Image 1 (cartoon, rainbow, N blue to C red):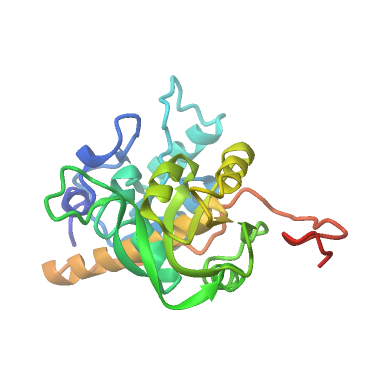
Image 2 (cartoon, rainbow, N blue to C red):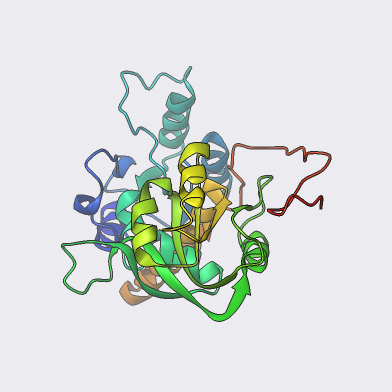
Length: 288
């Protein structure tokens, strides 16, 4: 069985910590480097539900996309939500490792997994990493469809292929417009609008789109005659867990490790219900 230090070294090779944003908090949060690892669980969020799942599974390592402590803390008291997570992990000899923005820009990374879930062909990064001589790393991806789809059909595909959430997929723009090229970015993406405009794509699929940036973006029809597709943050990043698990499986086979790698199916999207308006309208103003 590999030691935790060996598994972490393999993960750091996939997602080097130095490629994370300066504000990010990645790497190993808790864990004894010398402990043996037999089971690994991948999840988006280091919350009580996924930690309890790791305990039930008998995992020795939990790998999450989102950090536990992004802004630091002065306490790990079990009376706090995050402190309880730390206590549970340590009491059950479960290590926690985080790959966040260093996994976003990896090749392959979070947006590659998102594109793959939607059967999109990746062409290039949306925001290339200037330190990558091959031009494959970076934030987001510019993709092509094998066959054009309407915005409505692309949204339906996203709703079908991504994990189900109460939000589903929101659309801004003409639902009947044809899409041949699409930019994708797992997680919050409205800071990338300038890059999306420059990419000259037909649609942009991401998460956490805010009212004012989205409204201004679609209103600027002279420069951005494209559609926005807004999915749940958790749903756009969950496909990375399957990609990352497959990468670790491959490493395990190559090294002759007897690792059992799992992906959490626990839905940690915070929204739990959705009440639709009695009547909705499309872009023409006609009732649906």
